[in-house]
Length: 424
Image 1 (cartoon, rainbow, N blue to C red):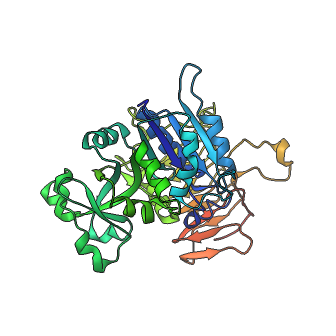
Image 2: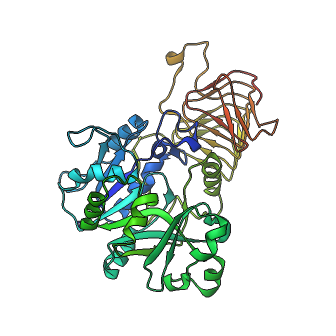
């Protein structure tokens, strides 16, 4: 894959994932208690043999930049790299990134340092596992200028995607961003031509764009230069390119989730706990890479654990953990119950000398009860705290910013302190 360069779009404000994005960008949000979301995309590249990777960042990017620079270092005998391209003002442009296409346009001078045949444009905030070699092989064999990865979807989900319509050769002839039901009937594609069975083609006759593109290098430059005011790939550049270039569809029917809301983020994590999850963290053929921490194994004291994932470096007393993910360096006190929840853990250990003899250490205190919640990093939950959304609220913002409720799920933001006895 030496003739391929990957450009990963670092994401915008991620407002739908607030408060997890209160102090970080979406790709920097922790995943599965051990990784960050950006690790999924970068690992897909590495596992596919693509080792020239640019990550374009702009909003709340400090933690993402720090994670990438400390994690992805290739050896001295490799030509590979993972390099951050932060939004910058130059003599050619004084503006920050205005959109996905604008970000790629401003990255073009850096791509010239390593000439390539094809450029893969990726998002840094999706959960999926893909072998890009198959994607690139199809792109090159079809002679396309642009190839878009598409997912077959039913009518009930079509409104969540940009929908593409392809002809019998797989060439895309029409694109509509999140179309209304009134125009869906004209956007159907016979998805049998892309490899689905007749039954699946009837059930899922729409092609949803995954926001993953392969551009012939010259086509990318020509398109971005030709339309200097175009700032977004999906809404502007792709529809305009259909008129002049050969734009093909490549069907991907594996697991893929845009975990851009609290509900989808929570659901994706609970799905990881299934006996045979659609996204398998334990796949030896396609591992997820992340920052090595060199932590000790977790220490458990007569804890009861059911269908859960416990990451390294945890200290768990006589607690009960059910259908939950417990992140690195988590501390859970005796008598605590954690159920149907994601606990992200901590960035560092905190001893008594760090916080004083009277102040409790970060973690979940004795006899706390946590159910259907997301607990961000470095949180201190006191003794006898109850987090159960007892009023069954769909949305709520605590005036003291100690917790939020989104889609009925309680989210405790990074670094929050919940005092002893608080009941939510």
